[in-house]
Length: 484
Image (tube, rainbow, N blue to C red; front, side, top):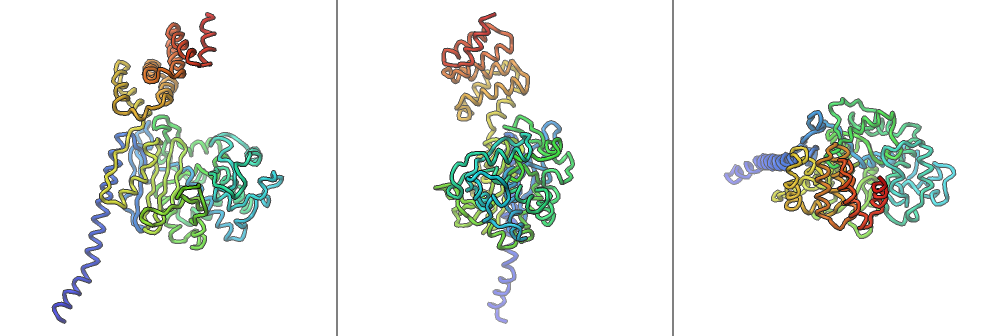
């Protein structure tokens, strides 16, 4: 063998080792960057978990902050979060399973499954429900409103359509609740039981559902609205009622862990629960909002990235939790993101992490404190005598977060009603009146705060200012105050 041949052989043998070492180092660097970004975010109120995988290899799978602030329990990769509207992809997959069992067709109209429908609803198809093109409104109630199945569907089918079925896109939660009921009618099984038997168990998922899984109480995350108001684990609400409201069933509210959702990704990727043809149906772009690159699959959103690749994704949330799945199919890069401290400043964290994956030079801006968290944190840690410093903080560092009077006004009521701190609530209302002197409602709220403190004179003065600016409520309150 010549020297040249020997060198070529050495290079061929060494090349995979070099590539492997390079990938290992890149992944280690990426993990450190993501970890540093989210650890820094915790100081600004971030609480949640992240999982990033490339080609089936997990790069990072960590929890951050607290699952339960009151008990100082940390988030982990096994913490149970509400995944919100990411429930819809399970509903869609279940429908495709039933189609595979020859139990239904996607072209089936609703009149095949429901009696005495209004004429405008009779020909809505399963496909239109799956693609949000049925014309049905988004909601007919709130997540935890108590309602019987019969009352719910009466309300749904009596609602006015937004447009003729199949002509436009309009996101509809109740459309997926109808799909959940079709699953029950066709399979003769409870919706959650069908998902558990045909989707979750085959995928190895034991920590996903509404009521069926066994969850240790220490694994359940508490959701915090605006990162300050505890709403409790959703699982506890289901257990209290012994069932899931039809306002949620099929369209939202399923709970899961990062690890279980990763198993779901693997099951879809490896055609464990759906055939390749069924999976393709699930992620085909069928249409979507006009003038938008976002298209709609069955329980998924589909876009073409700026890298000319396909990404499927979906978000979910309920005010206390937010959840995001980003799966770049062509590159096989997955980002799973959960948070139990919902705010506008953290809902996009998954997309920031995704940028870090695909752009090694990208440097993310630190996660910001949301204004509610910032103010409540200040109130908890400072006496009322420091109120001028808070106002200065708002004006100089967080001005853009308080461009509307409603924000500080809501905070005043949160501090007044939730935290029972009348003195600090008064200072917040005073600060809001100073910032927005032409807004009637801020003076009305300030008047109410003075009444809470028993200062009728000051209350009257502020209600008069509000009344002069057009507040009808203040006029009514003044009538009562001036009687005495």
